[in-house]
Image 1 (tube, rainbow, N blue to C red):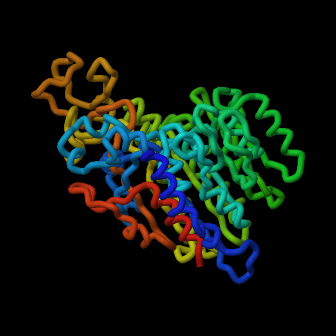
Image 2 (image 1 turned 90 degrees about the vertical axis):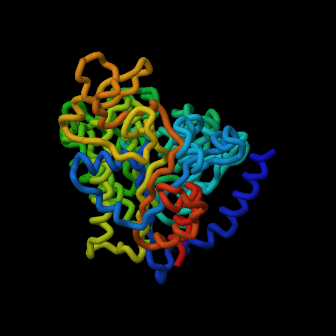
Length: 474
């Protein structure tokens, strides 16, 4: 009953008059509107602290408008007796953060639709009964271009919720069919008409067909010869020019719809490490993907909505692998910088007056702290190539930490210095950082719902939907 009432109230709050916020398509007097949401999946405050410790400087976006953000979903709320996030319990009970938490499907749904839902749902309300309209659909239906970019497979939860509506994130093939062709499949909630014109990500079935199958790839290749056609750029084994080929395809004036399909053994772009090594040029960088996506989308005179995800920060955090997490976060930061360069380029129609850029995550992953059982208000120790090499498992569950194992017994003793520890192999109910700059960024403070004693004012993740909608109004 509680879930049904919450759905009814939130649906009314977030959808009434939403279409009226968009400029009329083709209105010559309307200034174009641009909204770009960048998501570092699985990041948190300690991830950023580790990156700053390693590189010696904070990312530029950390000086933007900032609020903390709560990420709980309805399953988390029900577990905690109706309270999604309790600051007092978080900072007094170490295990509170990992007792219940969101997944990427429900958190992405909150971002894109303004609605809370159950874990696993892809832009579908609780109880699998309500199809929720996404920010990408609102934009596309209003005549604005829409695009999605990710470093993990395109039917993964975070990109999927941008364009699909499904009862279960595991229905990857059906999710892909809906995103590319608008077709309903297993677990779907009807067909979709307002589709992205840019889709770039991983999941190429030659390397891993768990997410996109060979029949779908053959159909996609066939669509390169129909109208409106896809310009398709694929990963080619041994070809190190993926980024160049993708950007060239985007720059072709005949390209109206761009599809980039890459990946590797695990379904994602191959990880790079903190020092930039192990980057595989058979896949483009996230920054190159951002460049290609914007090149196509900016041809729409009315503007566009774009989501860019650095997905493997989460995957590295699940593995408790700080070196890989840092490499992926630095690649994500490069993509943010690429977006900002585009906004500030005087040759574009973009500026900070008509563009909103949001930088955040969807949840924290790994419960990274200064030590085992240490709350995350304590600073991490040294993060450097030397200490990255020290990271190893410290318990039977496979959690990892970096410490000076003086006696070589593989256990953290009381007299040994610990630099950091992962306390979970999954997500946590931690607040995460949200940064914003440009048109509408000032609206964030108006959505604050509480004050955390360590992170300060925080809002709920559903507020991003409202801020993005408002940023399209003039």
